[in-house]
Image (cartoon, protein in one colour):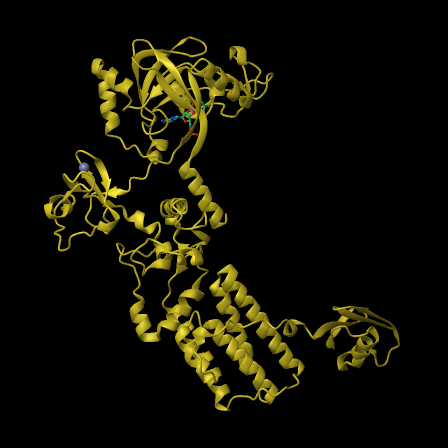
Length: 607
Ligand code: ANZ
Ligand code: ZN
């Protein structure tokens, strides 16, 4: 899956928008009805019990009178309640000894407490439909609870509930007035029925929890709020901003040291002037990392968060980060950007245009990490080979979105490559720079020039669009091989060599800036390479001037000839017959027929 789509899916799941119905079951003797949230109101007539979270008020109430319930809740308190843990742990429960009235059938259904119900989602209670929900099914089997099927693939098909629940949508049965409706129709009809009876309503729930942005820590941006007993939370007036944290703080104690620094927190209320306290919590670091990219555009402005430069630069063209940021950081940054948009600080809807999630650097197959002590410090390598070499090596080792196995020996290869380029430039400039008088290029030089411009085309695409720097470097390496082999002795040859070396140095300069800067000057320039334009593809150089054709005599390949593109057929026939090797097979025979397959083949038939 493309990363962009993958990240969007992860964010969508994280937000977890879910449309369902919230409905009430009346509990005999309880002051409040028991509310549940369901995404499958079509299964309502299949409800055979209700399950509440261990922290649910009904469970707590039952525990007061029932020691078994109390013990169960106690055990639940000790369990991990992360959703991941919930999925795999054993489903346990305990009857609360009470029943609730089914809103449609009027039947009494037992109420249980269960460890798989989250207090923090929906209403903290579920209507259990063991015939159509696998979790409810397992729980019902284990606790001998009723399983009542109400959804079937069609009216004349049966379902098999001996092994598992039937979780697909389908057609309703055993559901009284709703029999025969499809699941989708029943969603609407049952929601309507419950709304009319004031027993329920359509609800949209989100898995996403509120983002608590404050932390009880010293490090972090101060929250510019003053807490006043009379006025509540009051914003620090603009004139008093920024609130600056005290320095020289002792960080050894538990809890925030700010709470112990009266000099920091004792203040007066901006509203009523009474004694008040400054907020001692600071912002979560995610808070600032959610908009730093925007602040970069206006970093020297002390009066506002962002000025008009933000709209000039934003959105960020290319954002790079690890996949571990797919959800929290990237989602918060998007929220924050929309907040800034609504406040009129930025114009666009999204902070980043493209996302590249970089791979990991591996050493001996495992992730480099400080705790494992298997990290490589690039400093000694930079010391030994220079930063350019280390950069070429890293960029060449793998495409940026894949993991890279760090092999020290690879640095040597990168070093040899740069030295090769260095020698090629030096050999060339030793003979003085070529003049730029007009010249006629031989076929060989035209071919070389074609490879040069094909390389510019490929490298531009690899770097600019595909972001595969490794294949860009590989293409430059191939070009350098060809330049070594080429005999560029005459004026025309030296001009092509000059053009090629300039392009190579320009293309390599983002990756090996130092050496390229020097080579650029060696090639006769006085400006800085960093200010120079990227090389441009000469479309006319890409046109293949000659084409190679195979020549067969009586079906056997005997030669390959080169002819100018768009040659006349007669010219091609003549060229084929003139070839030395072809002559050996035709000279003493009679040519019966010559067939030319344009761009491919000449076939000669002799007897
Ligand atoms: C009855 C039912 C029948 C359900 C059926 C599903 C299938 P999403 O899509 O994630 O929103 N549920 C509701 N609140 C819960 C809680 N606090 N803890 C654990 N589970 C809870 O899931 C909604 C479904 O998850 C709800 O729909 C409910 O089970 C359960 F054939 O209700 B359903
Ligand atoms: Zn006040």
